[in-house]
Image (cartoon, rainbow, N blue to C red; front, side, top):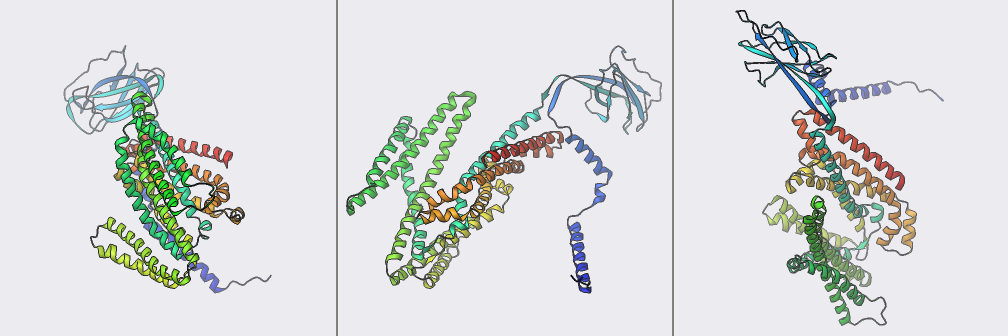
Length: 609
């Protein structure tokens, strides 16, 4: 192998790269204002030492104390006339100042006798003629020896007075067993709040991230294809179904709310509704039929199914009322365990929120699915020319609907008050795109709608994930007020988008063999996910969820800085008040909890994963 001779160009290139790196780091030092001289300043070092020592003495334990306070007179400066002070009682603790007077700024020797052995406390200058004065100057700390004596030097303040001044020694002795300080108790309460804040946020995020992860996985969505007719009708079906669902549920709510206060009605409704729904669906959806039903029978069955849905929502509202009424009874009866009753009441509130949302989504998906199947059958069975004509009508309508809804969102956010900008122009642009798609797409070709849904979902997840939980906490503090609830919502939203990404990437990395085998049997998408995808993703999903709980515990200390609850709120308060000993206690609690979380999650992963 021949050795390459060094060339002038290679040497010059290396030199230019080194020069570029030097310039980048030099400019980085300039931008970040690095100044090591500031670190070496005596003032900075004194402050750093003071704070470090405070952090090393966390305010966790305290003792009951006996306090010995002794005063001794002194003149600053020395008076012109001769003077003397009363001799102290030498059978009790006493201090002697030598000399008995001094000029401002000079030092005196303070000797203490007969104090408790091996105790410490401050020795201070007390200005004024009142020995009970609480103002202390030039404080220094003294520690007694085994005989209860001490000797220190104390500088007199640079202030002169003809009156008698005092020097005070305050010695404290710990007695009894150590006790937790109020700071330790507050820290314990807040760290428990932090753990459960992170737990609820992780639970909320996991529940919503799991279904999102399937539509954000490319390998599951790339095979989803539909003709334009089906896509357009499905798109039109969503807003129509949501509107119908909300309207119907509003009627059901108005009829149900007066009955929700009656517990007997709650119990009867909850017991009877499932029975009615069971018999109705058995009649409307028979498993075996000898001959096809007549149109009248089909219409009757459809009406019974719709009525069963209404009965089901009525039963859900009554169940919510029953849960709330039980919670009210338990709250009044359980005393210190009343939080269990309040949990029932909160659960009722959650159910009341979820019923309209789930009903609207169910109606939207149902109508969208029905129209989509109609479009699919039309594209498969009708002539290509007729399907082309349908596409030329339906695609512009679908595009106009989507863009009009986006325009409505823009109007709601910015309140422009210009419908031509937020309604008519977006609708026209959407109709134009739909028309172009209908013109250039073949009538019966299946379009990759799955990739479109995948791209939109990933874009939304990436956009939300780029927003820090701290910013989300600020928004939710405005929405629900200062406290841990705002922290739960902020961390929950951030957990949804973060876990959805991690989950979807895990779905994309599964082995394709089981997926292809299940699909070869003719299984639908839901069956494919249940039998081919879920068995492969359960262990990593558990691992990611536990890791996210660990992250949420740490993040909750940050969102507490903006009022999001948890121990971060207490930590910020103590830092702002320069109470570093209390802040040290909170930082130790955070470190202990994070370490325990890491240990527990590793044990769970070892046993489950």
